[in-house]
Length: 214
Image (cartoon, rainbow, N blue to C red):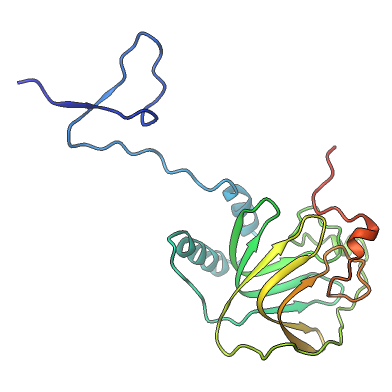
């Protein structure tokens, strides 16, 4: 008796030149396509190389759970430290929404606020070269109580504009001054007169959030 075969569905096999037959798979067996990694995976891997191993594992765990449609909040409250002369240091249950719509899940991020990073929205230490001199101090009151349990927060990178967050965030400066906001916009052009918050100066100075084409 001849062996029973089934023909692969279109798209499952490799390209078959004209005049040649398509490979067949014995009935009952399955053909698995190689898993395709997310389009932004190389960028995420390169960035994660600079993180401690424990943080890379935590980011990967949260990202994997999100990819499976499962909530994976860790026991960390959302907080942004406005560092002296340096970046915005975020921690919490963060979904970073890039300008092209891709999502990135993280528990710690260092985001540029001087406007000079070559790897926006992330800090690449260009604030040192640019001699960014903002102390990070601010004086604003809270608009919401500080959350007592972990909540998710979304941070959107607005094209040529600020970092816009949705979700209760505690913002702290290096002196311990703090305020909690349910939503807001954080300056990343480095020119706001109301740092760390956006005042629209990115439009006046022509801030560009992407690297100029050479």
